[in-house]
Length: 341
Length: 290
Image (cartoon, rainbow over all chains, first blue to last red; front, side):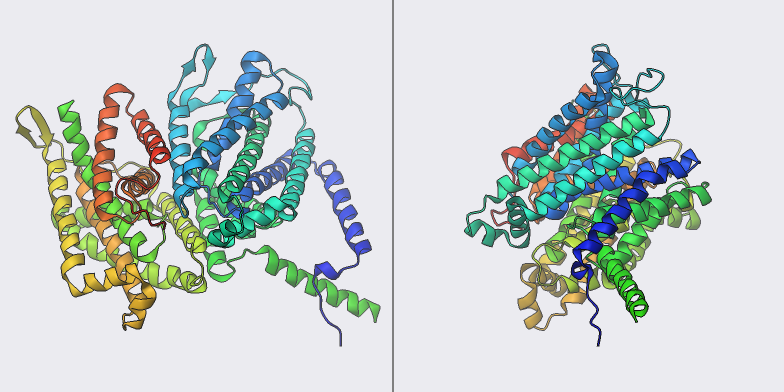
């Protein structure tokens, strides 16, 4: 009798070789694709995976749903873009500035909302981000800094390649930047999951009373998670404006952007490290296909996202990553067993 | 100033009405219905097509809209939310059910966008009758909407307090397990509540049609306002929802004297955040945490 086991029981050697193989594929991949459009899609997949992973830290690990993460993206994008345009500050610095602002805002929203449970945080994030979007759409100029109102802002082009200004003529450098960012956020998520903070957060999520009784400062833990999550999301926003060179409030700060991040995590598996990445890969590709083949129907990709989310919640409430992984492992095991015979 | 306060009260009655139906669903099911705004938009569309197809006034069409929306809501609860709630029956905060309603909201909004396009529709007449009370001139459709909304809310209150079904609904809201032990069909009560919430949205949609534009994204504004209204009033408090709605309407209307019209909503949202900072449990919320 052969017992079928999960991935955890694979030999460590196999795990390392699998990881090296994946790394090699990811490094070589952009050079093998001639069509820049496909490289761009890969970048967008990683970008969404990055943002969804950041969202997951407050909403998945700590169980405090945010429907307003687009505001943090916008804070990151506007901070780094405006600081570069008017103070010639490198976007690498600008993105950190944006991150700190976003983290501060998230903590401020969290202070009252985390005192109460339930949907308070969700509603507060909606109120903040929708209000913020309207501000961005209305404010034209502050001093001589052009906010562009509804038209958004453009990054001042420097012409040619510059690492300090994060401007490249080719898409490939962006690919590697977002790949490194994604790996970093995954490492952070893995670290949080295994750290004291992660255990505290999941204790608070499962049963706040019991956690409080054990002396866990639930309020502070949630604030830390909210700060980290918003900080990382703002970094994503700063990357986005460098990639596209142009942003408008409706697309970066609007509720469809916030909702997408939620959906990626729900579909992949909320509160897991791999879930947001898996969900982002799956939905972004489906969404892109819908956009290419049904370009006459704008908004269709959101209908598809929504329907997938509803189906996943109904039939696989913990996300699709776990069931999919189990199935694949089953298949791989069967193949191995056969070849060993 | 006075006229904008009155204007605010008029639109605030609709906010209050929408928030009241959200409170009903929350009070009984303990889920914030994140597709509330989109259901309101669907209610508007239903009322719009009833009125244009049958050529009747929205004040008659609202009965039909209420019935159609009740059926829709009943089925959403019975076929979609019920199975999710069942799976999570032991969990205190049903997060999946909440996400499900959010997903449904996105589907509704974008489906309507795909089907009906992004044209703006209106049912407004060329000339609007007005009524003059001392110095304030008011458009009549808004006055009708205000009065009918008040009547509906009063009827709602009496229904919950005085009828057998109202008592059953309140019992389920207070303690669903005990209600179940008393022989109440809890799941059917849930579905009726969700249906009633949607029916109210059908009525509110019909009331607002004569003086508001119709667009698939209109639900966003009303949904967001409804969310902050219920928190402002105190989660689960019905009088709180009504007073909160009126207050928001006035705040928005007064704010738009001083800032551009679009920014007035931002002022309202941020005032709300400041308010929650000072008094998290809302105007009339109980100390009991939900």
